Image 1 (cartoon, rainbow, N blue to C red):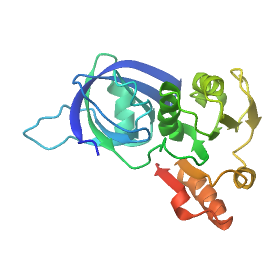
Image 2 (cartoon, rainbow, N blue to C red):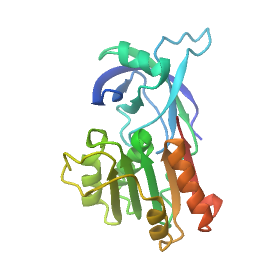
Image 3 (tube, helix red, strand yellow):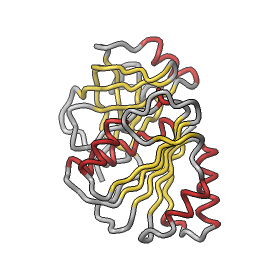
Length: 243
């Protein structure tokens, strides 16, 4: 298990996907960060003083592979005071602090089972890390991505999905968009919310699949209930809950 470290970072890029969703790219100002695909960090805007307590912070999934440690990406939805402060004050060149790694929502590259990823909105963050890791390490897992977004502006990973489709022979995806589809980014998109019963029913034919659920609580509950109703074992269902 990697030792938790407190590391200063520089904000080097900010990408806005919508009024309320951004990606922050952070450059570590110390070497030697270690984490596993799917883990998360604590992010603090205020400076950390080693002689004092850790400042106010929030947790975010790490949205890049541990093979790409020259930066750390996080996806942020503006919900509440802390993330509003991030949106209103953080600029390129600013210094902040992170504390990492944390979490057991990890991609197990040794598994021979099928891996079913189910994401809603910015819940796709840990799966970015999963997919980049599989691509960078030339793995060949059977990955089935199910990704639901409100509109096409929120389709955060079109290029990564296309790259995974090209480089991972056993990768497939299903993307649903709730609002009007005005740009398909060269991908096959479907209208409406993720169809819970249909996705679960089709997945039952896979090789003793492991399910990773990440997104809004209502989505996680809906899939969790359906999976258990169909007899999927509890130890084959993993959760990354967020508000």
